[in-house]
Every structure is written in structure tokens, then in C-alpha cells.
Image 1 (spheres, rainbow, N blue to C red):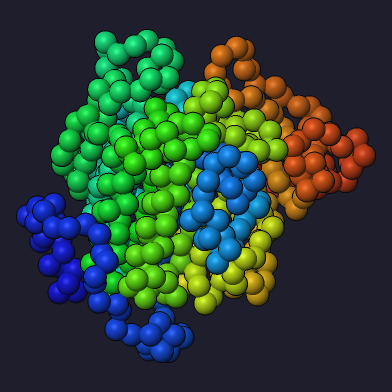
Image 2 (image 1 turned 45 degrees about the horizontal axis):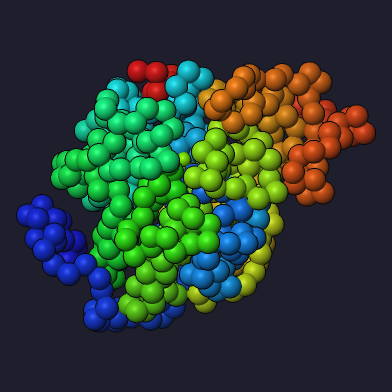
Length: 479
Ligand code: MG
């Protein structure tokens, strides 16, 4: 606790800004994770690295032919790869709300059919009565930090420090917001991005410390702040939430990564994130925290396909960001915890970013909130290679509209809408619904509803039961 107070005091007084950021020479943690207080009392650190708009096919370990991701490939070989892991929404704000609350976005009002995400003129944000993972873990004695893009409300009452995080460093909404009036119009600004085209603020806790944020340095600076947080809290359990601003357009990377990737600018950006992951894992190793830390790597939604070469790829999955086709919500996901997660394994269970909530609570010995409905399933047995996820259903929402449901290998679409962008992209209602077998047909090409009326009926019954208990909250995105 002393240490924690000293840290907060140091943050408050700005001392941290002037000390070296990396942690090469710090003493390792004194205690062995598995002997300190016995296995039962042991509570791992939790790190969630959350990319922005990363596609299912954007990592070498998920099949990308030209983007080099040696650190993520190593993370996969030392940990577990999830091939059927989903975000809770196909766009930023609802996806992030769901990750941190373990609840479908409509339960907190963090979605809308009119405005898909929060904007700089929004008055709403994540309601104070939502229970975030940071709040639960902090109540268990965890130090907590959010480093990166927030996008759950930029007004003071909604910032990370109001939602269970001891500290915050990052941008409050997307890096393409606050576009300045005299920047090149339309897509031209994205094709040759300059920092000054977007007046995005950079915050430390609740104070703006830079505007516009120098986006070229964000991935590097997030990494430095995150590594420093780990180092300073090595003696106690911690929760680090590291939501990168990238690879959301406009794309920026530091000079070190300029013109390095065969995939061009987009590849440079991913390769810098890969470096960042390597730095985080190496920091944990050097402090001998690797066997006491669970690290998740995933993304908030699929690739922003309308930006052509500047957007990622969903690989063989259909469509991308903004749609409830697989490419919009299935994410390249890795989990790493040496000594606990068997290395080089693949989990093909259906799982969701919302499941991180229940998983972290179970590992931290925290009770799940009981006075509210959660959509979160404990993955810890699956992570140990000792069992399966108990999740049976996965709901695909676009705003308040239930678009599709996955049950086992089956996905039933009630409605589809291709990713937003140029051209008419109107919602299409499917009555009767269409059905895909995602394990035989991951690209959603062959409607097999006619041959499986029993499956269609079973999922429709699940939907009826889901709707009967559903209490959607008023939209925060329309305030
Ligand atoms: Mg996003």
C-alpha cells in the first residue's frame, strides 16, 4: 500500500515524467508465485492488450503472408491461440463497454441504432452504476491502470479514473475524431495523414497534457507507460488494460517502424504493436512475473475494409468492422500465462471478450456481481487446458438490433447489413432466417437452413428466451 501511495503521489506531482521509462535493471519479485501463500491464495496479474480494428487475418500466426509478428507468434507458441473468439460488437464503444462490464452493450445503454459510437460532442458515457472489471479487481487489492484509447465517455465523470482505474494515460476517443476544418477533405487526409489534421487530446488521468496528440509516438509511449506501471507494481497484483489506438485509421507509427513492412503502412503499424507486445512480455519475464500474469491479446472489432490498403483483413472471414458477419466480430486472440496455460495450444471453443470479466474475477477470487445480468463465462478451465468454456450462445448485436445468434457450430442470421461505407448498405431482414455451419463454412457462403429446420427452431426458441429476460438501458450514445 505504501508503494501504491508513493506511486500515486509521484503521478500527481509529475515526477514520473522525468524518470527513465523502461525497466531493464529492476529487481525481480521476491516471492515465487506458486509458493507465496500457497496456490489457493495466489492471484495472478491480469493484462488485456486490446487493438483497435485489427482483422482476423492480420497476424502471421493467424495466416498473414506479409506482416511480420515474431513477438505475437512467440506469444502464441508459449500460450494459447483462440480461433473462435469474438468481440461483443462490431464497433468501438459498445465493444469496449462490454469488455469492461462483462455485459452486452445494450444492458448498459452503450450502443445506439443512430450513432454507432461516442463522438466528441456526446454527452453520455459508461454509467457510474456499471461495475467495471477494474472496480472489481481494485476491490480485491489490485493496482489498476488504463493506458490507451478509452472511448467510453470523454467528459470528466466518465473517464477511466472514475471507473476503477488508479491512473490513465491515453486518448479519450478515436484518433480520427476532432478533425480540423482545414485538413484535406474526405479520405485524402487518411491517405497521407499528418498529426495536425486531428485535434485529438492526450490525457494523463483527467488532465489534457498534449493536443493534438503526437500520434506517431502513441504506440511507443503507451508501451513505456505500461511497462513502467508493471515495474512499479511488481510487488502486488495488478490489472493493466492496454487498449491501443492503432491500427484504427489514420495510421501512424514511430520513425523506427517507418517503411519496414512488406505490407506497407498498415504492416508498419502492426509490426510496432508486435514490438510493443514483446516489450510487455519481456518486462514481465525480466521481473519474474511471467508465471504470475495472464495476458490476453485481442481486438475491439474487425478490420475497417473501406480504407482499402489502410485497413486490415479478416482473412477468410466475411466482411469487417461494422457488420455482424464473422469478419466484423471474430478476433485474432492469444492468451499467455507460462506455467499455467499449456504452450502452443489452440482453443476452438466459442468465447467472447465479455468472458475476460468472469475469468479475471475467478482468478482474483472475486465474487461476480449478482444484482445484475452478466454475459460472461469463466474461461479459466479452458485456459489451463482442463475443460471447455460453458458458453452456449453468442449474440451478435448491431446497436439494439439482434442480428444473429451462434450456437455451437451454427449461426442463425435474422438480419444482415454489410459494413458501412460507400454505396447503399441497407439492412436486409431474413424471414425465414438464414443458417450457416461456421466450422464447415467459416466464410458464411452456404445457407443450410432448409436442411436443418430443427436447428433453426432451437435457436429461435433461445432467442425468445433471451428477449423475455432482456432489459435494455436507455442509449448513452444519443445523449
Ligand atoms: Mg475499433
